[in-house]
Image (tube, rainbow, N blue to C red; front, side):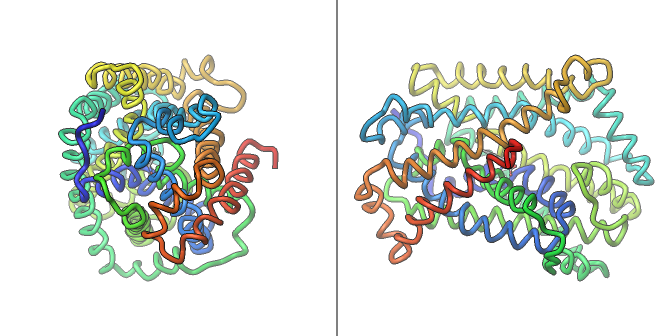
Length: 445
Ligand code: PFF
């Protein structure tokens, strides 16, 4: 039985800590760059509001009602076919799989915090070489920082909900917000700021195709930490009589504002000192350091602070990616927290080493199947299959399986007249959207 519960603010910070991650500060700006700016941002915002927010409430509800690990919660709440529904709870596995590459990326960020103190690349070409050397040749450096990430994350998990996860979020989340806001305000004083605003908010719908829709829906899910049992597992430790709708609202608001603030700030720097909005995953590791170089010593300070904020965002998300499976072994197999945390930690750490090696020259060939390295496969399978499946399962479960009275009893007082609209969207809009996303990500559509 659970004893430790989040405080009210602790829950919001931890859930927002889960949501605000590499997705917000690393991925959101580069996919915005890739899909042409404003029009993509509008689709993304609409998806977050229409689909993300309603699934977030549903996921919180499952955890809040179930009060246990995801598998047990699904099993307990299903009125019949319990043995089948419990498999929906294994969406927590997706989080553990994501950690396989997430931890490697956090390792790169640690490395950039250290190197930015004394070195920034003087051109985009040089930055490209630096990043590519790290990725394709520097086994030991990557291994060292991947190990650090593993130790940090596992240590926090061994300390539990209150003494580990809540405590870390209480320190890291406000620090991250202060750093980002500070840099954002600096960016507003630069000449290029209006250009960044225009790029992010002026829609040019000619750049939008069906791909952009799919990417926007997929990203809305990823950035809000939905479909992987993270929010569900945290919600099992929510205080009694919590207002789920308010909590979900805060998490969505914090997550979205941080993505927008980070995007505006990064694009301003890239317009002012760099080559304009960069596309692709190299945005923060390649174009940005080269832009910081142009700022002189201030650039070094900004770079270090920026990568610290990015690392914090990644670490608070990481614990939430592993916690569902930790909780599973604690609740279902009576493992101690120490044993569960270390076992799950070792899993992502060791498999993460394979992912890391799959980018390294010399190992790449044996660790590449089809057009993707092992690293890319893990990213693809989690994002294209596991995540939409998790979302689909939750929408159907709350929309059709759990008795409506039970859902109403909790959510009607909180949602008021919007309850029916929410229920409708959960039953009909979300599952269809999830299905389309999945089919198109796996290439059927
Ligand atoms: N929301 C995180 C991000 O934007 O980076 C990633 C994530 C964390 C996804 C936890 C899913 C999850 F369960």
